[in-house]
Length: 479
Image 1 (tube, rainbow, N blue to C red):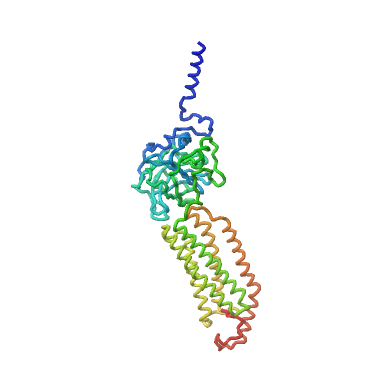
Image 2 (tube, one colour; image 1 turned 135 degrees about the horizontal axis):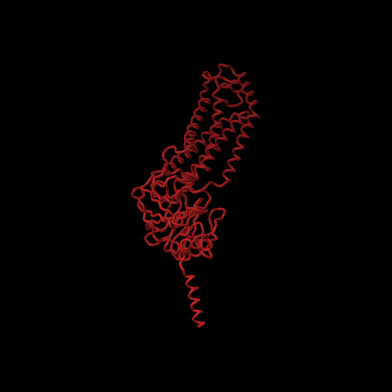
């Protein structure tokens, strides 16, 4: 009798612990705030049917409980994870379909999130998703001919299926999941984008404001998932962190994992190589040699008559090839990236600066070689165009400082998505910004009166009818 009672009690206890959890049940010891589900719910491509990309492809996540997986069931499957500055992308291969999870690192408020299949924005099929105020998620498949807002594609090369039950729109690390037919290549070039402003509409063709950051990367889906791998269904964390509920991003927004990829291993695209060459060469032309040429004119003119020779060799002979080459590289990079026209302030000022440089070269040649004094107003014995030439030169150098800073602070992260340039560049820029004006205006304070006295003495000892070639008493080749 006692043996029968014991067997009955054991059966009752077993049935209690074996009972399936309902949608609102607690997930047990992992205490991650979500309910565990089988791996089949994660990788299944048959969950909600894809809506036409030309309509509202929206669906509501059933609950936060469906956003987690049985992590151990993923071990041995194929997939991979790549992380960028603001988001991580996880890919999980399930035969003929691949599940992609786009997850925020929690560094910025999410407005919309996207990935595309290609190495640059132009002509790459994109999947863009965003949360709506009614709790639903919109999936929009788009393409763009250049660096412009992509538009909805009625017949995309591959139809993406929103997995709303696996997506999570709340919390620190919201994620958006879709499936798409598997590609033949396991290592794929992809692009990513993270927008901070929500479109404010459930429509798939809603207007998108420009992304906070974007860029190219690649993801390798051939890796075998192990216990210490990044979780492709929760790519901000590792499998062990997902299972234990202890996952949290470090200060760089990423966590350790054997299948994680970062920018350090991603080769530069051709247009990015052109951008770097443009930046370096233009910087030397405009921000190194032009200031040096101006300092030579300011400091040496009262001591040697060869100052002008040095001045034009530096400003024209050395700086000109660099400036022309840098400008050509910039134009080429813009065209390679598919940007149409002068898309922003940096590009517009770049063209203006190039034109101003040539105007300055022409003005300097006219002042020195032709000396049209009879057509000019004089100020302290010097023609007004001499002063204008000096002021225009300082203006060009000032704009060059602005251009260099906007280049590495704004243009590089905007058009490559590789994040900001290291702070060392900013420190060097600030130091040079202090030194150049200090040396130039220091020369003005020390030598301007001396220059005026020498020029006045030269005019007094020179006959008004004498040519410039008959002026041996001139202390320097003044303008």
